[in-house]
Amino acid sequence: MSKSTQNRRQFISSTGKAGMALAAMPLMAKINPMSSMNSITTLTAAGEYAQQPLNYGYAALEPFIDAMTMEIHYTKHAATYAKNLADAALAEKLDINQTSLKQLLNTISSYSVKMRNNAGGHFNHEMFWQIMKPAPATAPSGELAEAINKSFGSLDNFKTAFSDAAKTRFGSGWAWLIVKEDNSLAVCSTPNQDNPLMNVAEIKGAPILCLDVWEHAYYLKYQNKRPDYINAWWNLINWEFAQKKYAEAITKK
Ligand SMILES: [Fe+2]
Image (cartoon, rainbow, N blue to C red):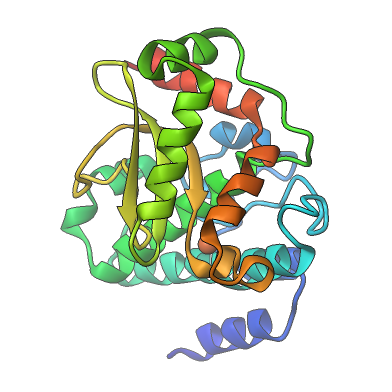
């Protein structure tokens, strides 16, 4: 390990502050300092590779997700994925100025397992923070609401299908709502830090919603009761952001 890498690791591990971990990231130069979580699509390709600030405080999602879980999840788990992704990009000579994160995920089978795990881990968590906001949740509206009704019959049917995917994902992974190539909506889940943008994914599509069902996302508050965490999470959905992702997905086709 190089001295600079070692120093960076020591720096990150010695701080509990998201902003400090962010400052330690090696790929920050091209990030627009005015960017927020809701304008992440304006980031440069290189900027997408760095952890972005949270739009809310660690305690903002209480009582559904506790502050300690959020702080550890953001400053330790997610920060580490971003850091390891940066390390893998350097080691594998990935041109992050020219390769968007989505392009990387679309071609992930050409890279190492380290790149796969950490590119997925970084992308998934960045989306996860944005898809949540402090309660109370609103409801989906507009085109997304219509698409959910068309694909699942009702919002309740969709929630049941999504919750079942999250509950039954064995071990660690994620549940997803995606737009498939034919513009229909589907629910699926992925193992580990894989996601539906990866060319290795069993079911591919553009992510609209995602739920982290790794134990690190809920164990402090919910222990082995993953279904309780899933039920609570529905109170935190940022449907406006989901609608934005849906509009982007169907427009780009
Ligand atoms: Fe996580």
